[in-house]
Length: 307
Image 1: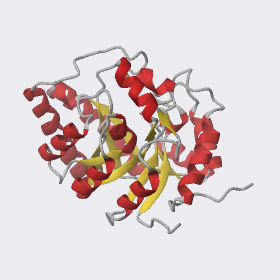
Image 2: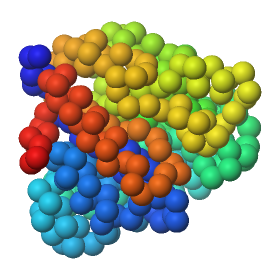
Image 3: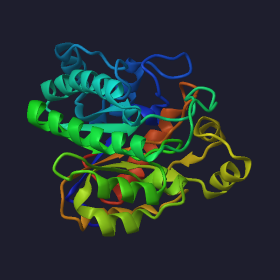
Image 4: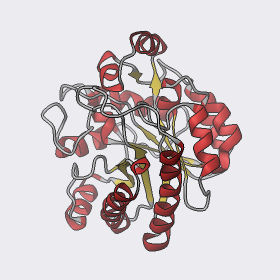
């Protein structure tokens, strides 16, 4: 398999079942860092704000001790709610950006606020938004992206997400059409696109110039069909195993990775397999197998196994 020279492999706390800064149903940060290094990864995201140590010097020490580096961070923002939500996002993104830049990273993944509770799946707001709220969403991201770039040198990459107001391919394409490519670009999450019955390869073909970051994830189509039939939330779907390790789901990884590599853009391709809630012994073997599979597809850098 030829090396995919433009694509750099990483992982994220999500792949170890981490959805929250702290939760009894997920692993702690020390175990996470120890095990991703053991699985062979070099690059990691920060995960939920507050999960990893927030002091840059301490976090740099912990990363260096394991031979790890940071690719980016993630923040949820409900910008459709207007000015107050934008102010909250500016504050949260400023904190995250200061930590990222201190560690040499420059990608901040922004996720829209879910309309279902991440613990229970209960609806917390309407799944639809009106034209004014959509305008708040798009103009808010433009303003936030400009601020992050000009003040911190950080790139805002927007992450479409199931159970949010930017989930389906139609909504993703509309969002890209309505935002400024100077300040807002795309984190293509292959799993969320497939979960919502979208076409990742079509998005790569049509909007390749907007893709600046990637989350690699696969969906079990049988579980996805059950989710649709039973009208389940994402919080209910994940424990059923809707997100699976490659190569056992959709989209197929080799053609996806080849299409991304042909964009001729340096991209982080970050494994993000939702596993919450999870027993602490579960993620490591999955993460190690995934790293090995993707290394076989030509992705790097991944350490060679020490055993």
